[in-house]
Image (cartoon, rainbow, N blue to C red; front, side, top):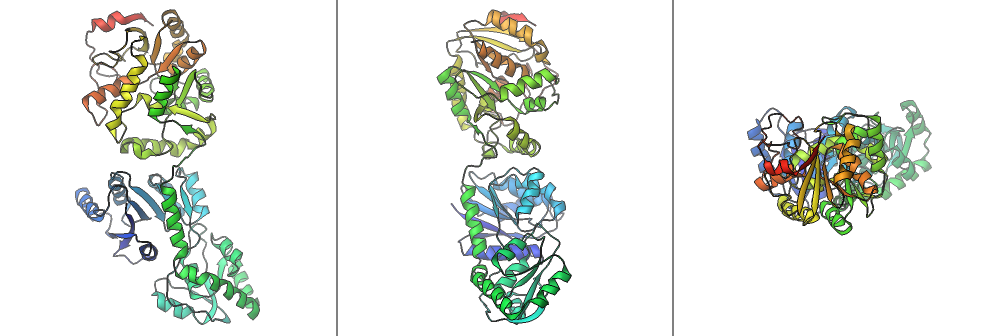
Length: 552
Protein backbone atom coordinates (compact mmCIF):
# COMPACT_ATOMS: atom_id res chain seq x y z
CA UNK A 1 0.00 0.00 0.00
CA UNK A 2 1.70 3.18 -1.23
CA UNK A 3 0.88 6.88 -0.94
CA UNK A 4 1.31 9.33 -3.79
CA UNK A 5 0.68 13.00 -4.44
CA UNK A 6 0.48 14.75 -7.79
CA UNK A 7 2.29 17.95 -8.66
CA UNK A 8 2.19 20.07 -11.78
CA UNK A 9 5.59 20.77 -13.37
CA UNK A 10 6.69 23.12 -16.13
CA UNK A 11 4.25 25.90 -15.25
CA UNK A 12 4.62 29.18 -13.40
CA UNK A 13 1.31 30.00 -11.73
CA UNK A 14 -0.35 30.37 -8.34
CA UNK A 15 -1.76 26.86 -8.74
CA UNK A 16 1.70 25.43 -9.47
CA UNK A 17 3.14 27.24 -6.43
CA UNK A 18 0.47 25.80 -4.17
CA UNK A 19 0.95 22.29 -5.54
CA UNK A 20 4.69 22.52 -5.06
CA UNK A 21 4.27 23.56 -1.42
CA UNK A 22 1.80 20.75 -0.66
CA UNK A 23 3.99 18.15 -2.39
CA UNK A 24 7.01 19.35 -0.39
CA UNK A 25 5.04 18.93 2.86
CA UNK A 26 3.65 15.54 1.81
CA UNK A 27 7.19 14.34 1.17
CA UNK A 28 7.77 14.55 4.94
CA UNK A 29 4.93 12.02 5.30
CA UNK A 30 6.64 9.64 2.84
CA UNK A 31 4.33 10.41 -0.07
CA UNK A 32 5.84 9.69 -3.47
CA UNK A 33 5.55 12.53 -5.96
CA UNK A 34 3.58 11.91 -9.14
CA UNK A 35 4.80 14.52 -11.58
CA UNK A 36 2.37 15.89 -14.16
CA UNK A 37 4.09 18.01 -16.76
CA UNK A 38 2.02 20.89 -18.07
CA UNK A 39 0.97 20.72 -21.70
CA UNK A 40 -1.76 22.67 -23.51
CA UNK A 41 -4.98 20.65 -23.73
CA UNK A 42 -4.70 20.31 -27.52
CA UNK A 43 -1.08 19.15 -27.52
CA UNK A 44 -1.91 15.41 -27.61
CA UNK A 45 -4.45 13.37 -29.52
CA UNK A 46 -6.31 10.71 -27.52
CA UNK A 47 -3.75 7.99 -28.24
CA UNK A 48 -0.77 10.18 -27.31
CA UNK A 49 -2.57 11.40 -24.19
CA UNK A 50 -3.30 7.82 -23.15
CA UNK A 51 0.38 6.89 -23.46
CA UNK A 52 1.45 10.00 -21.55
CA UNK A 53 -0.91 9.23 -18.67
CA UNK A 54 0.27 5.60 -18.59
CA UNK A 55 3.76 6.94 -17.96
CA UNK A 56 2.58 9.33 -15.26
CA UNK A 57 0.79 6.63 -13.25
CA UNK A 58 3.31 3.84 -13.85
CA UNK A 59 4.29 3.83 -10.16
CA UNK A 60 0.73 3.19 -8.93
CA UNK A 61 -0.41 -0.22 -7.71
CA UNK A 62 -3.57 -1.81 -6.39
CA UNK A 63 -4.55 -0.66 -2.87
CA UNK A 64 -2.53 2.57 -3.18
CA UNK A 65 -3.81 6.03 -2.31
CA UNK A 66 -3.15 9.10 -4.41
CA UNK A 67 -3.83 12.70 -3.52
CA UNK A 68 -4.66 14.37 -6.82
CA UNK A 69 -4.09 18.13 -6.61
CA UNK A 70 -6.85 19.82 -8.56
CA UNK A 71 -7.15 21.39 -11.02
CA UNK A 72 -4.23 19.79 -12.84
CA UNK A 73 -3.93 22.71 -15.32
CA UNK A 74 -4.01 20.14 -18.14
CA UNK A 75 -7.72 20.43 -18.92
CA UNK A 76 -10.86 18.30 -18.47
CA UNK A 77 -10.01 15.71 -21.12
CA UNK A 78 -6.73 14.95 -19.39
CA UNK A 79 -8.34 14.81 -15.95
CA UNK A 80 -11.15 12.48 -17.01
CA UNK A 81 -8.78 10.06 -18.74
CA UNK A 82 -6.41 10.19 -15.77
CA UNK A 83 -9.23 9.37 -13.35
CA UNK A 84 -10.49 6.51 -15.54
CA UNK A 85 -7.06 4.94 -15.65
CA UNK A 86 -6.41 5.39 -11.92
CA UNK A 87 -9.75 3.88 -10.94
CA UNK A 88 -9.00 0.83 -13.04
CA UNK A 89 -6.57 -0.20 -10.28
CA UNK A 90 -8.18 -2.50 -7.73
CA UNK A 91 -8.99 -0.77 -4.45
CA UNK A 92 -7.05 2.38 -5.35
CA UNK A 93 -8.26 5.45 -3.43
CA UNK A 94 -8.25 8.87 -5.09
CA UNK A 95 -8.31 11.87 -2.75
CA UNK A 96 -8.91 15.10 -4.63
CA UNK A 97 -7.30 18.15 -3.05
CA UNK A 98 -8.78 21.36 -4.43
CA UNK A 99 -6.18 24.08 -4.14
CA UNK A 100 -8.18 26.84 -5.74
CA UNK A 101 -11.32 27.05 -7.83
CA UNK A 102 -13.34 30.00 -9.09
CA UNK A 103 -17.16 30.17 -8.75
CA UNK A 104 -17.68 29.60 -12.49
CA UNK A 105 -15.71 26.32 -12.27
CA UNK A 106 -17.73 24.73 -9.48
CA UNK A 107 -20.70 23.31 -11.37
CA UNK A 108 -18.59 21.81 -14.16
CA UNK A 109 -16.26 20.19 -11.60
CA UNK A 110 -18.89 18.45 -9.46
CA UNK A 111 -19.15 15.28 -11.56
CA UNK A 112 -15.38 14.84 -11.43
CA UNK A 113 -15.21 15.49 -7.67
CA UNK A 114 -17.97 12.95 -7.08
CA UNK A 115 -15.61 10.24 -8.28
CA UNK A 116 -13.24 10.79 -5.35
CA UNK A 117 -12.88 8.61 -2.26
CA UNK A 118 -12.45 11.81 -0.24
CA UNK A 119 -12.03 15.51 -0.94
CA UNK A 120 -9.92 18.24 0.65
CA UNK A 121 -11.47 21.69 0.14
CA UNK A 122 -10.25 25.21 0.91
CA UNK A 123 -13.34 26.32 2.83
CA UNK A 124 -16.79 25.52 4.15
CA UNK A 125 -18.10 28.16 1.75
CA UNK A 126 -16.84 26.20 -1.25
CA UNK A 127 -18.24 22.99 0.19
CA UNK A 128 -21.71 24.52 0.60
CA UNK A 129 -21.67 25.77 -3.00
CA UNK A 130 -20.55 22.39 -4.36
CA UNK A 131 -23.32 20.61 -2.45
CA UNK A 132 -25.85 22.94 -4.06
CA UNK A 133 -24.47 21.91 -7.45
CA UNK A 134 -24.80 18.21 -6.60
CA UNK A 135 -21.70 17.12 -4.65
CA UNK A 136 -22.52 13.79 -3.02
CA UNK A 137 -19.15 12.83 -1.53
CA UNK A 138 -19.42 13.37 2.22
CA UNK A 139 -15.90 12.36 3.19
CA UNK A 140 -14.65 15.94 3.15
CA UNK A 141 -11.78 17.69 4.92
CA UNK A 142 -11.87 21.49 5.16
CA UNK A 143 -8.40 23.01 5.27
CA UNK A 144 -7.54 25.20 8.26
CA UNK A 145 -5.03 27.41 6.45
CA UNK A 146 -2.40 26.96 3.76
CA UNK A 147 1.06 26.44 5.25
CA UNK A 148 4.23 28.09 4.01
CA UNK A 149 7.30 25.98 4.86
CA UNK A 150 10.49 27.86 5.73
CA UNK A 151 13.53 27.48 7.99
CA UNK A 152 13.93 31.27 8.37
CA UNK A 153 11.91 32.20 11.44
CA UNK A 154 12.05 35.92 12.32
CA UNK A 155 10.46 36.76 15.67
CA UNK A 156 11.27 40.44 16.37
CA UNK A 157 9.08 42.91 14.51
CA UNK A 158 8.42 46.61 14.75
CA UNK A 159 5.03 48.33 14.63
CA UNK A 160 5.80 50.39 11.56
CA UNK A 161 2.07 50.83 10.83
CA UNK A 162 2.80 49.83 7.25
CA UNK A 163 0.70 47.37 5.26
CA UNK A 164 2.86 45.21 2.98
CA UNK A 165 1.61 43.78 -0.30
CA UNK A 166 2.90 40.24 -0.88
CA UNK A 167 4.30 38.85 -4.11
CA UNK A 168 3.77 35.07 -3.83
CA UNK A 169 5.99 34.43 -6.85
CA UNK A 170 9.15 35.41 -4.94
CA UNK A 171 11.41 32.82 -3.36
CA UNK A 172 10.48 32.01 0.26
CA UNK A 173 13.73 33.39 1.65
CA UNK A 174 13.20 36.69 -0.19
CA UNK A 175 9.62 36.97 1.00
CA UNK A 176 10.47 36.29 4.63
CA UNK A 177 13.31 38.83 4.51
CA UNK A 178 11.07 41.48 2.93
CA UNK A 179 8.51 41.07 5.70
CA UNK A 180 10.98 40.76 8.57
CA UNK A 181 11.02 44.47 9.42
CA UNK A 182 7.48 44.45 10.75
CA UNK A 183 4.15 46.10 10.08
CA UNK A 184 1.18 44.13 8.74
CA UNK A 185 0.79 41.74 5.83
CA UNK A 186 -1.98 42.50 3.33
CA UNK A 187 -4.27 39.48 2.89
CA UNK A 188 -7.04 41.15 0.95
CA UNK A 189 -9.47 39.75 -1.61
CA UNK A 190 -13.12 39.63 -2.61
CA UNK A 191 -12.77 35.83 -2.90
CA UNK A 192 -14.89 34.23 -0.17
CA UNK A 193 -14.14 30.56 -0.98
CA UNK A 194 -10.42 30.11 -1.58
CA UNK A 195 -7.58 30.11 0.91
CA UNK A 196 -5.11 32.95 0.36
CA UNK A 197 -1.51 31.74 0.32
CA UNK A 198 -0.55 35.16 1.74
CA UNK A 199 -1.86 34.23 5.19
CA UNK A 200 0.55 31.32 5.54
CA UNK A 201 3.40 33.50 4.28
CA UNK A 202 2.68 36.16 6.90
CA UNK A 203 2.41 33.65 9.74
CA UNK A 204 5.69 32.00 8.73
CA UNK A 205 7.23 35.48 8.52
CA UNK A 206 5.93 36.25 12.01
CA UNK A 207 3.88 39.35 11.22
CA UNK A 208 0.18 40.06 11.85
CA UNK A 209 -2.23 40.47 8.96
CA UNK A 210 -5.02 42.64 7.64
CA UNK A 211 -7.92 40.68 6.12
CA UNK A 212 -11.30 41.49 4.63
CA UNK A 213 -14.18 40.33 6.85
CA UNK A 214 -15.94 38.24 4.20
CA UNK A 215 -12.89 36.10 3.39
CA UNK A 216 -13.05 32.46 4.45
CA UNK A 217 -9.99 32.88 6.73
CA UNK A 218 -11.39 35.93 8.59
CA UNK A 219 -12.78 33.77 11.41
CA UNK A 220 -9.40 32.05 11.88
CA UNK A 221 -7.61 35.40 12.06
CA UNK A 222 -10.07 36.80 14.57
CA UNK A 223 -10.24 33.71 16.81
CA UNK A 224 -6.45 33.40 16.96
CA UNK A 225 -5.90 37.15 17.43
CA UNK A 226 -3.32 37.39 14.67
CA UNK A 227 -4.40 40.61 13.01
CA UNK A 228 -7.11 42.98 11.90
CA UNK A 229 -10.42 42.01 10.30
CA UNK A 230 -11.84 44.99 8.42
CA UNK A 231 -15.04 45.74 6.51
CA UNK A 232 -13.29 47.77 3.79
CA UNK A 233 -9.88 49.17 2.96
CA UNK A 234 -10.54 52.48 4.68
CA UNK A 235 -11.49 50.61 7.84
CA UNK A 236 -8.33 48.51 7.54
CA UNK A 237 -6.06 51.56 7.28
CA UNK A 238 -7.81 53.21 10.21
CA UNK A 239 -7.39 50.16 12.45
CA UNK A 240 -3.70 49.84 11.54
CA UNK A 241 -3.04 53.46 12.47
CA UNK A 242 -4.91 52.98 15.76
CA UNK A 243 -2.86 49.90 16.71
CA UNK A 244 -0.54 50.86 19.60
CA UNK A 245 2.70 49.04 20.39
CA UNK A 246 1.14 46.91 23.14
CA UNK A 247 -1.63 45.66 20.88
CA UNK A 248 0.89 45.04 18.11
CA UNK A 249 3.06 42.96 20.48
CA UNK A 250 0.00 40.83 21.35
CA UNK A 251 -0.67 40.28 17.68
CA UNK A 252 2.95 39.23 17.13
CA UNK A 253 2.94 36.90 20.14
CA UNK A 254 -0.16 35.15 18.82
CA UNK A 255 1.45 34.83 15.40
CA UNK A 256 4.62 33.39 16.99
CA UNK A 257 2.51 30.67 18.61
CA UNK A 258 1.42 29.56 15.12
CA UNK A 259 4.66 30.32 13.31
CA UNK A 260 6.49 26.97 13.78
CA UNK A 261 3.27 25.08 13.03
CA UNK A 262 2.73 26.87 9.72
CA UNK A 263 6.41 26.96 8.77
CA UNK A 264 6.62 23.23 9.47
CA UNK A 265 3.65 22.42 7.25
CA UNK A 266 1.71 20.99 10.18
CA UNK A 267 -1.75 22.20 9.14
CA UNK A 268 -1.37 20.57 5.73
CA UNK A 269 0.03 17.37 7.23
CA UNK A 270 -3.00 17.18 9.51
CA UNK A 271 -5.36 17.68 6.57
CA UNK A 272 -3.64 14.98 4.51
CA UNK A 273 -3.69 12.47 7.37
CA UNK A 274 -7.37 13.15 8.09
CA UNK A 275 -8.18 12.63 4.41
CA UNK A 276 -6.25 9.35 4.37
CA UNK A 277 -8.22 8.16 7.38
CA UNK A 278 -11.69 9.02 6.11
CA UNK A 279 -10.97 7.79 2.58
CA UNK A 280 -10.85 4.25 3.99
CA UNK A 281 -14.02 4.67 5.99
CA UNK A 282 -17.41 3.59 4.71
CA UNK A 283 -19.18 6.58 3.25
CA UNK A 284 -22.88 7.07 3.67
CA UNK A 285 -24.56 9.80 1.70
CA UNK A 286 -27.91 8.93 3.27
CA UNK A 287 -29.35 8.11 6.69
CA UNK A 288 -30.58 4.64 5.75
CA UNK A 289 -28.72 1.39 5.14
CA UNK A 290 -28.95 -0.64 1.93
CA UNK A 291 -28.15 -4.33 2.28
CA UNK A 292 -25.94 -5.67 -0.50
CA UNK A 293 -27.02 -8.36 -2.96
CA UNK A 294 -25.75 -11.24 -0.81
CA UNK A 295 -27.43 -10.06 2.39
CA UNK A 296 -30.67 -9.27 0.55
CA UNK A 297 -30.82 -12.74 -1.00
CA UNK A 298 -30.03 -14.35 2.36
CA UNK A 299 -32.90 -12.40 3.92
CA UNK A 300 -35.32 -13.60 1.22
CA UNK A 301 -34.19 -17.22 1.59
CA UNK A 302 -34.48 -17.10 5.36
CA UNK A 303 -37.90 -15.44 5.60
CA UNK A 304 -39.56 -16.39 2.28
CA UNK A 305 -40.61 -12.75 2.03
CA UNK A 306 -42.11 -10.87 -0.87
CA UNK A 307 -39.95 -8.26 -2.62
CA UNK A 308 -40.72 -4.84 -4.12
CA UNK A 309 -37.72 -3.22 -5.83
CA UNK A 310 -37.37 0.48 -6.63
CA UNK A 311 -35.03 1.76 -9.34
CA UNK A 312 -34.49 5.15 -10.93
CA UNK A 313 -37.68 4.72 -13.02
CA UNK A 314 -39.89 4.35 -9.95
CA UNK A 315 -38.28 7.43 -8.43
CA UNK A 316 -39.15 9.37 -11.57
CA UNK A 317 -42.76 8.22 -11.34
CA UNK A 318 -43.00 9.27 -7.70
CA UNK A 319 -41.80 12.71 -8.78
CA UNK A 320 -44.49 12.89 -11.45
CA UNK A 321 -42.39 11.96 -14.49
CA UNK A 322 -43.49 9.36 -17.03
CA UNK A 323 -40.94 6.75 -18.12
CA UNK A 324 -40.55 4.82 -21.39
CA UNK A 325 -42.82 1.90 -20.52
CA UNK A 326 -45.16 3.45 -17.94
CA UNK A 327 -47.07 6.72 -18.09
CA UNK A 328 -47.34 8.68 -14.86
CA UNK A 329 -50.59 8.79 -12.93
CA UNK A 330 -51.27 10.33 -9.53
CA UNK A 331 -52.48 7.01 -8.13
CA UNK A 332 -49.36 5.17 -9.30
CA UNK A 333 -47.08 7.83 -7.82
CA UNK A 334 -48.97 7.67 -4.51
CA UNK A 335 -48.88 3.85 -4.44
CA UNK A 336 -45.14 3.75 -5.05
CA UNK A 337 -44.41 6.44 -2.46
CA UNK A 338 -46.51 4.62 0.16
CA UNK A 339 -44.66 1.33 -0.43
CA UNK A 340 -41.22 2.95 -0.44
CA UNK A 341 -41.83 4.45 2.98
CA UNK A 342 -42.81 1.15 4.60
CA UNK A 343 -40.32 -0.62 6.83
CA UNK A 344 -39.08 -3.94 5.49
CA UNK A 345 -40.05 -6.96 7.55
CA UNK A 346 -40.25 -10.74 7.33
CA UNK A 347 -43.34 -10.40 5.16
CA UNK A 348 -42.05 -7.96 2.52
CA UNK A 349 -38.59 -6.65 1.66
CA UNK A 350 -38.53 -3.15 0.14
CA UNK A 351 -35.45 -2.55 -2.03
CA UNK A 352 -33.68 0.50 -3.45
CA UNK A 353 -30.63 0.86 -5.66
CA UNK A 354 -27.43 0.15 -3.72
CA UNK A 355 -25.52 3.16 -5.05
CA UNK A 356 -25.09 5.51 -2.10
CA UNK A 357 -21.79 3.97 -0.95
CA UNK A 358 -18.85 2.21 -2.57
CA UNK A 359 -19.78 2.81 -6.20
CA UNK A 360 -16.34 1.49 -7.16
CA UNK A 361 -18.09 -1.93 -7.13
CA UNK A 362 -19.67 -1.01 -10.45
CA UNK A 363 -18.24 -0.49 -13.93
CA UNK A 364 -17.56 2.98 -15.31
CA UNK A 365 -20.84 3.24 -17.24
CA UNK A 366 -22.88 2.36 -14.18
CA UNK A 367 -20.89 4.71 -11.93
CA UNK A 368 -21.30 7.53 -14.43
CA UNK A 369 -25.06 6.99 -14.66
CA UNK A 370 -25.57 7.00 -10.91
CA UNK A 371 -23.24 9.93 -10.26
CA UNK A 372 -25.34 12.04 -12.62
CA UNK A 373 -28.57 10.66 -11.16
CA UNK A 374 -27.57 11.40 -7.57
CA UNK A 375 -26.36 14.89 -8.44
CA UNK A 376 -29.96 15.83 -9.18
CA UNK A 377 -31.90 13.39 -6.99
CA UNK A 378 -29.84 12.68 -3.84
CA UNK A 379 -31.81 15.13 -1.72
CA UNK A 380 -35.03 13.52 -2.96
CA UNK A 381 -33.79 10.08 -1.81
CA UNK A 382 -32.95 11.58 1.57
CA UNK A 383 -36.43 13.03 1.83
CA UNK A 384 -38.51 10.15 0.48
CA UNK A 385 -36.68 7.07 1.89
CA UNK A 386 -37.79 7.20 5.51
CA UNK A 387 -37.25 3.54 6.48
CA UNK A 388 -34.09 2.69 8.46
CA UNK A 389 -32.92 0.09 5.95
CA UNK A 390 -33.69 -1.40 2.53
CA UNK A 391 -32.72 -4.42 0.49
CA UNK A 392 -30.79 -4.11 -2.77
CA UNK A 393 -32.73 -3.57 -5.97
CA UNK A 394 -29.76 -5.16 -7.72
CA UNK A 395 -30.74 -8.70 -6.67
CA UNK A 396 -32.19 -8.77 -10.21
CA UNK A 397 -29.12 -7.05 -11.72
CA UNK A 398 -26.32 -9.24 -10.31
CA UNK A 399 -23.98 -9.28 -13.31
CA UNK A 400 -23.59 -6.74 -16.10
CA UNK A 401 -22.93 -3.58 -14.06
CA UNK A 402 -20.51 -5.18 -11.60
CA UNK A 403 -16.81 -4.41 -11.94
CA UNK A 404 -15.90 -7.75 -10.37
CA UNK A 405 -18.16 -10.35 -11.99
CA UNK A 406 -16.61 -13.31 -10.18
CA UNK A 407 -19.40 -13.32 -7.56
CA UNK A 408 -22.23 -13.40 -10.07
CA UNK A 409 -22.37 -17.20 -10.28
CA UNK A 410 -22.95 -17.28 -6.53
CA UNK A 411 -25.71 -14.68 -6.77
CA UNK A 412 -27.54 -16.65 -9.45
CA UNK A 413 -27.12 -19.84 -7.42
CA UNK A 414 -28.87 -18.16 -4.48
CA UNK A 415 -31.62 -16.82 -6.72
CA UNK A 416 -32.28 -20.31 -8.07
CA UNK A 417 -32.57 -21.61 -4.50
CA UNK A 418 -35.63 -19.37 -4.06
CA UNK A 419 -37.72 -21.29 -6.60
CA UNK A 420 -35.98 -24.67 -6.46
CA UNK A 421 -38.62 -27.44 -6.37
CA UNK A 422 -41.49 -24.93 -6.26
CA UNK A 423 -44.50 -24.29 -8.46
CA UNK A 424 -43.96 -20.80 -9.86
CA UNK A 425 -46.29 -18.35 -11.55
CA UNK A 426 -44.47 -15.87 -13.79
CA UNK A 427 -46.35 -12.63 -14.41
CA UNK A 428 -44.64 -10.74 -17.23
CA UNK A 429 -45.03 -8.54 -20.28
CA UNK A 430 -45.86 -9.89 -23.70
CA UNK A 431 -42.27 -9.58 -24.97
CA UNK A 432 -40.41 -10.70 -21.81
CA UNK A 433 -40.41 -14.52 -22.21
CA UNK A 434 -38.37 -14.87 -19.02
CA UNK A 435 -36.46 -18.13 -18.86
CA UNK A 436 -37.13 -19.04 -22.48
CA UNK A 437 -34.01 -20.35 -24.21
CA UNK A 438 -32.07 -20.69 -20.95
CA UNK A 439 -32.14 -22.75 -17.74
CA UNK A 440 -32.93 -19.93 -15.31
CA UNK A 441 -36.06 -21.67 -14.00
CA UNK A 442 -35.12 -25.23 -14.91
CA UNK A 443 -35.04 -26.29 -11.24
CA UNK A 444 -38.62 -25.15 -10.57
CA UNK A 445 -41.22 -27.90 -10.06
CA UNK A 446 -43.58 -26.29 -12.58
CA UNK A 447 -43.97 -23.03 -14.49
CA UNK A 448 -47.20 -21.19 -15.29
CA UNK A 449 -47.52 -17.73 -16.81
CA UNK A 450 -49.84 -14.76 -16.88
CA UNK A 451 -49.05 -12.43 -19.77
CA UNK A 452 -49.75 -8.75 -19.30
CA UNK A 453 -49.00 -5.70 -21.44
CA UNK A 454 -45.39 -4.71 -22.09
CA UNK A 455 -46.27 -1.04 -21.57
CA UNK A 456 -48.53 0.70 -19.03
CA UNK A 457 -49.17 -2.54 -17.11
CA UNK A 458 -50.22 -0.53 -14.06
CA UNK A 459 -53.30 0.60 -15.96
CA UNK A 460 -54.44 -3.06 -15.90
CA UNK A 461 -53.34 -3.70 -12.30
CA UNK A 462 -56.77 -4.76 -11.05
CA UNK A 463 -57.27 -7.31 -13.84
CA UNK A 464 -53.76 -8.65 -13.34
CA UNK A 465 -54.36 -8.92 -9.59
CA UNK A 466 -57.59 -10.81 -10.21
CA UNK A 467 -55.78 -13.30 -12.46
CA UNK A 468 -52.98 -13.78 -9.95
CA UNK A 469 -55.34 -14.47 -7.08
CA UNK A 470 -57.19 -16.94 -9.29
CA UNK A 471 -54.11 -18.89 -10.41
CA UNK A 472 -51.44 -18.07 -7.83
CA UNK A 473 -52.61 -19.96 -4.75
CA UNK A 474 -49.80 -22.11 -3.27
CA UNK A 475 -47.41 -20.78 -5.92
CA UNK A 476 -44.34 -18.57 -5.77
CA UNK A 477 -45.24 -15.53 -7.88
CA UNK A 478 -42.41 -13.95 -9.91
CA UNK A 479 -43.26 -10.54 -11.33
CA UNK A 480 -41.51 -8.97 -14.35
CA UNK A 481 -43.92 -6.17 -15.12
CA UNK A 482 -42.20 -2.81 -14.62
CA UNK A 483 -43.50 -0.39 -11.97
CA UNK A 484 -46.75 -2.34 -11.72
CA UNK A 485 -44.75 -5.25 -10.28
CA UNK A 486 -43.78 -3.16 -7.22
CA UNK A 487 -47.38 -2.40 -6.37
CA UNK A 488 -48.56 -5.94 -7.08
CA UNK A 489 -45.77 -7.55 -5.03
CA UNK A 490 -46.50 -5.38 -2.01
CA UNK A 491 -50.27 -5.75 -2.20
CA UNK A 492 -49.98 -9.52 -2.71
CA UNK A 493 -47.73 -9.74 0.35
CA UNK A 494 -50.49 -8.13 2.39
CA UNK A 495 -52.91 -10.80 1.13
CA UNK A 496 -50.64 -13.66 2.22
CA UNK A 497 -49.02 -14.48 -1.16
CA UNK A 498 -45.29 -14.88 -1.74
CA UNK A 499 -44.53 -12.50 -4.63
CA UNK A 500 -41.11 -11.36 -5.80
CA UNK A 501 -40.50 -8.50 -8.23
CA UNK A 502 -37.59 -9.76 -10.36
CA UNK A 503 -37.56 -7.20 -13.17
CA UNK A 504 -34.86 -7.78 -15.77
CA UNK A 505 -33.43 -10.95 -14.26
CA UNK A 506 -33.72 -12.80 -17.60
CA UNK A 507 -31.53 -10.31 -19.50
CA UNK A 508 -28.95 -10.45 -16.70
CA UNK A 509 -28.88 -14.22 -16.81
CA UNK A 510 -28.50 -14.28 -20.59
CA UNK A 511 -25.55 -11.85 -20.37
CA UNK A 512 -24.05 -13.91 -17.55
CA UNK A 513 -24.28 -17.12 -19.58
CA UNK A 514 -22.62 -15.54 -22.63
CA UNK A 515 -19.94 -13.78 -20.53
CA UNK A 516 -20.93 -10.40 -21.94
CA UNK A 517 -19.28 -7.14 -20.87
CA UNK A 518 -21.87 -4.89 -22.44
CA UNK A 519 -25.66 -4.96 -22.66
CA UNK A 520 -26.06 -7.12 -25.76
CA UNK A 521 -29.50 -6.87 -27.39
CA UNK A 522 -31.31 -10.22 -27.39
CA UNK A 523 -32.88 -11.05 -30.74
CA UNK A 524 -35.79 -13.20 -29.55
CA UNK A 525 -37.23 -11.34 -26.55
CA UNK A 526 -37.20 -8.13 -24.53
CA UNK A 527 -33.79 -6.85 -23.44
CA UNK A 528 -33.10 -4.68 -20.41
CA UNK A 529 -32.39 -1.03 -21.34
CA UNK A 530 -33.70 -1.67 -24.88
CA UNK A 531 -37.16 -0.56 -23.85
CA UNK A 532 -38.77 0.07 -27.23
CA UNK A 533 -38.84 -3.67 -28.06
CA UNK A 534 -38.00 -3.10 -31.73
CA UNK A 535 -36.82 -5.80 -34.16
CA UNK A 536 -37.63 -8.75 -31.92
CA UNK A 537 -37.92 -12.04 -33.83
CA UNK A 538 -40.04 -14.32 -31.66
CA UNK A 539 -39.20 -18.02 -31.98
CA UNK A 540 -41.95 -20.60 -31.81
CA UNK A 541 -41.78 -22.20 -28.37
CA UNK A 542 -44.56 -24.72 -27.64
CA UNK A 543 -43.36 -25.21 -24.06
CA UNK A 544 -43.67 -21.46 -23.40
CA UNK A 545 -47.11 -21.32 -25.04
CA UNK A 546 -48.36 -24.26 -22.96
CA UNK A 547 -47.31 -22.49 -19.75
CA UNK A 548 -49.58 -19.49 -20.43
CA UNK A 549 -52.77 -19.53 -18.38
CA UNK A 550 -54.14 -16.17 -19.51
CA UNK A 551 -53.20 -13.25 -21.74
CA UNK A 552 -54.48 -9.83 -20.66
